[in-house]
Image (cartoon, rainbow, N blue to C red):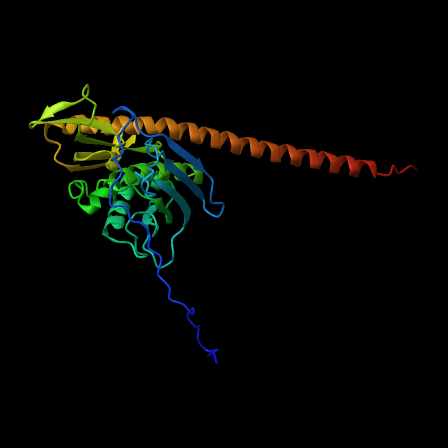
Amino acid sequence: MNDRRRINPPPGGTTPPAFLHSTKATNRPVRTRPANLPRSIFLQTGLVPSASGSAYLELQSSSSPPSKISLIPTSSSPKITCTVHGPRPLPRSAPFSSTLVLSTHVKFAPFATRARRGYVRDASERDLGVHLETALRGVILGERWPKSGVEVVITVLEGEEDAWWADDRGEGSGAANAGWGMMSVLAACITAASAALVDAGIDCVDMITGGVAAIVRSTGHAADATVNGGSRSVVVLDPCPSEHEYIQAACVVGYLRARDEVTELWMRGDAGPESESLLDQAVQAAILARTVLSETMREAALLKFDKQAAELNSDNATGDATRRKAKSKDVAMTG
């Protein structure tokens, strides 16, 4: 007699499924674009109706063909969402502030990176929030919003890997490339936050964009390479860490093109005498990102104005019809 309170096993013996695990790594993705060409950017605003302003930014993934050996993608493509809440009045318990109080919040989704993230912000996420706040503080005209606060929330849906996935198994120089993906994420966060601030209608001195450049070991850019310390290196715009075996230094800037000002500068690694060249290339990457931001905001403004004009014409037509109907009902009084 079978026991109904438990799940009985199959009558015969079973063998657990064995999944094939390939020990052979695919080839490392190779950078096919020139050293002075960043990845394509997709940017769109107004995706979150409940927020004052919002933006979504996505970088183009690597052009390397998918591997037939493994389902693991060869490289990552950062995807970031940004929402702006405010300006809104500060709580009564907050101290008086004659300028706008800016707060930034950067959080990786649990599935954003290969190593699953926690639900509580770690040190790296708080560090990104501080860098983002520094970049935006020099852009917003805070004196126009006294006793008010604004919150910029960044959610990283897909981050930038610090190295090629096979380097984690000891097949590459993963330790040398640890942490480089945060530089590209910060540059994307600055550009997305700028678009969201403009979408929210917050007064700014200029639209800020983020740019990143790095000094990497040359892998075919002989025309741009320089011999430094016995090894050939090259300065590239918008580096993808999975495409380079070794990154010597990297630089991220928040740049205002109209004012020719840098509000945020984060340089990591040993650039040596190439520091100025690395900074110039990072600014150049920010200038190229500015073209995408300007075109996106222009299209968003035209769409918004066309919608407002259509609503205004509809209201005018409704008002004219109402007046004509009321006039037809008038009765002429005669003596």
